[in-house]
Image (tube, rainbow, N blue to C red; front, side, top):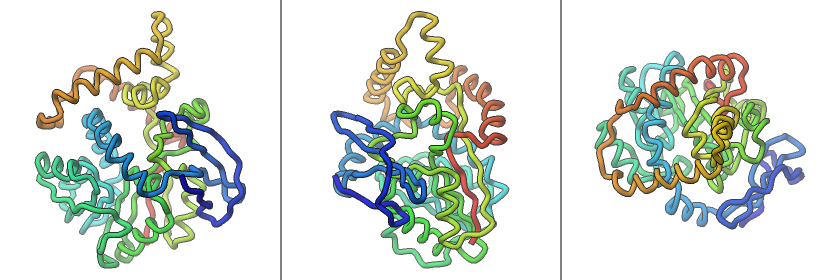
Length: 324
């Protein structure tokens, strides 16, 4: 584990949580100077890479359909901000989001460290993605009209460097669209240390709209638009990912009404998912192979998402649209 200072350069903080995962304890702190929340100490770069290889991408296989739907919703929400020309999607995973960009006739580019994800994007969408990380990628400055980074900056070891690189890659008047978990969300306020945004040890930083906007302004971005998204009260994915706490208000109470233990139920379901993956991971992804339960969940969440995320800005993810 390595100790780090806050992005503002100060080293004074309050400890918010001590979180445990697989016999390891992670300390989440809040800077007294700028209010940024981050992990300190944290695994060094080599150890973090080992964690990714061991757990992260495998677990993501369970949520391909959910991520496809999220990408579709994201595209619907941000397409009005996109500028004609080229787009770079950083950490583009399996290409779900880039796939929807075809509708805008943009020149598509992606960068992603996972070989399996790159292969998936080509096999399913015929999208070619470069392997690597944005901080070390050799890309000319002023290259893109649009740069997107969805659920990325919470993972990087220095968001200041990554956001500066994004600024440099944009053409004049280009737009950056960033999304990251919102620790000022309604769910975190209620769930606290059981908030599903605490993905350990992969998420190193936890932003609020205020702390993230401050960094964008310091780098030089202008005309910054702040939104939140993903207020999904009825979310099976959230339930699985957070060991039964993602949809604590509704699903947990329903299970208790039928005298079922939510923790035991979520653990059983997670085991079933992984067992199923061992048998089906080689099968081709079918984008619109959604069950009635999938469709019902999406339908019920839509008005709630509109009210709480769009209007009250208490969604689980911050979205920033910012121009160079």
